[in-house]
Amino acid sequence: QVQLVESGGGLVQPGGSLRLSCAASGRIFRVYDMGWYRQAPGKQRELVARITRGGSTNYADSVEGRFTISRDTSNNTLYLQMNSLKPEDTAVYYCAARTSTIAGRYDNWGQGTQVTVSS
Image (cartoon, rainbow, N blue to C red; front, side):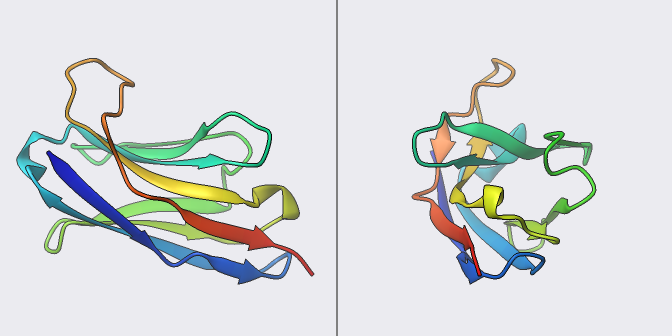
């Protein structure tokens, strides 16, 4: 229904910054909200940030004040600006979109992009 393609991951030193992008295509009009998830080795996937259709945002406590989620509706792209990165931010980051009417149930996923924070 909605195709998502992430980009922008890579290797960065602690304290550095990265910006992830997620290009969306397909039935965009059906999307209620979008989010960024991450999954570190041996850990469960967790919600990092989300943005609703109306523009409201929410963040995980661990990234509040360091990460910013935003979108450009003119080109259907979602962003995640990550500043003051820490080694514990190392994970595969996934873009997700919800077309389900069930809150919290993201039903469209990107392939993921690796973020590694290391000196």
